[in-house]
Length: 171
Image (cartoon, rainbow, N blue to C red; front, side, top):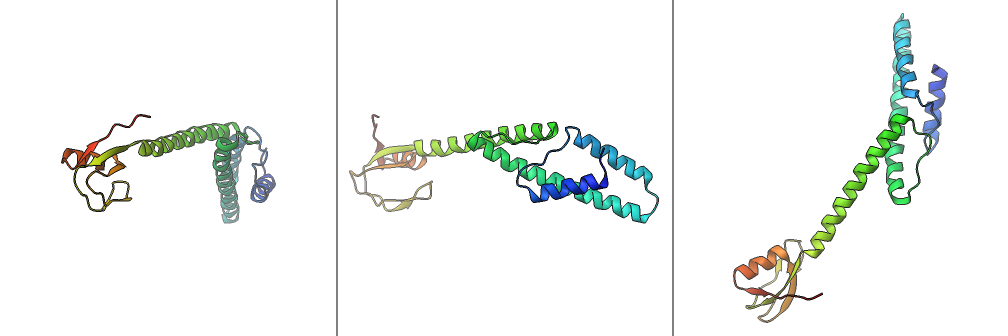
C-alpha cells in the first residue's frame, strides 16, 4: 500500500539513480487507489495542497521513468541489453518504443542507401557549366566527351534534353 513516505522515497530513488528503481507490478493501480482515497479524505486547504504536492512528485516520477525507458530502448537496439525493474505497463511501452525506433532507423537507413544507389553514369555530348545537383552537391563543369556519375534526376534531365547519354555500367 502506498503512503506519502513511500512516494517520497520512490521520488528520491528515481531522481538519484540512472536506472529504473524497483516498483511493485501493480504500482499504477496502487497510485490510482491512493489518490482516490486521498481525495475522499480531504477536509481542508492544507490537505488539498499536500495532495497537489504528491501529484507533482508522481508526475516527476512518471516523467523520469519515461525518459529512462526511452534511453533504454535506444540502448537496447544498440546492445541488446534489456532494462530491469519495469512494470508490465512500462514493459509494453518499452516494446512499442523499440519497435517504433527500429522501424524509423530501418527506414532512414534504407533512404540513405537508396540515395546512394540513385546515381547514373552519363557521357556528355556537349559542354556543360558547373551546376548544383539535386543532392545539393556541385558538379562540373563538363566538356563534350566527359563521363560523370550524377544523381538520377539530373542525369535524366540531361539525357532527355540530348545533352548527355546514359552509359551502362556492369558491376
